[in-house]
Length: 266
Length: 283
Image (cartoon, rainbow over all chains, first blue to last red):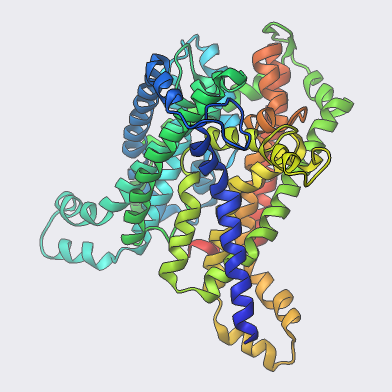
């Protein structure tokens, strides 16, 4: 009896925290994107789709989205290519604190440090800041992310599978391509998707390493301070929230299905 | 030994990349921090400790440093207190599939939309934000409630929102894996429920709390978007660094603040890793 009451209280508590602290702000953004008034105040004025129509006329928004996709694609490809092999080394060096520290320090420090260091570095070398320098900055953070996700998968692999292949006469390259790679492929694809989403969304590293172009977060940052822009940002945010929710839901469900979720918090 | 060095070859691209685009840039910030600076991007290659002394001994510098740590600490405590009952509920009272679904639902909004969420909170909190204006128009309050202003409170609310799943998830993993026998044993040996919590549950949860500490605390130390959008006049380390790099243009001084933040971060992480053996979580 006592236990049932405790359970009920905790159930309610969890529901309230998740809905109010995590979901309410997002739901409000979507609701107010259809509001005719500029500010977030109840009661709603008239329902309208005009902010969306105005948004669709705004070419800078679409350009920003395209730039974000461009940066995220480059970051994903580079960090997978560079980071995946390192996950294999990590297996032998996971107790070597120098190696672990070296690879994971960029993952632990605040993003701001990656951003300003690259700002200083590029300006000392007279490198023109651009979308490419943004992607270079994102990869610094996403390499450790890839190493972490892929090596967590490697840790759970049965080494006998590789041994069996070698004993049966396959060479190392054949074994890698036909045994190891198919086994870790889900982890690599999850790592790639997560890097893509993270890079698309990153603001702080981007802020310091970008030139004259805008990514989506930079577009928001530029528009956010003028009250007149609130409705258009709200409409743009709602679109991103809905599309993002669907994508992230599928990515994460895939990750849970493949048993890649419980083993790593990233 | 030979086998080990072969294994290191796979890490060469990563080591090269991180050296060129992380460690060398950090080193250049470190060197710059000892140069004499001035406004408008003036840099004199004269070695000096002036920048560190200016930051660490000026009342403004100390104030920013302490404010930032206090905000991060408060936010960490709030998020841990909110997270614990949720993790307990998910780990002990739900089956695994349902619990994972709820955790998934908590993570989904956080993997995208960072600025969107800060933007949303910017319109919800604040003197004229949604909460205060709704309560006012409903007649529930006479004047706006200060806890919902754009201020330190705003930063703590958004910080909590951002790091809640990162606090819930590690705690959930640990709580789920504590064998029930352990509680029974403690009870048999004469402990009461409160005793069990403080002497069995809490010590076992420390690695999880350490992970959430890293996420929440360190992320806030370098934050500048949250304070400038929902913090009102609150000025944190991140604001100080970005202001001095981009607006004032005193790069050597800004570099000294950055290096201080970096050393601060490394020191905190090392202490946490040593004290709580965060590794246990993954093994």
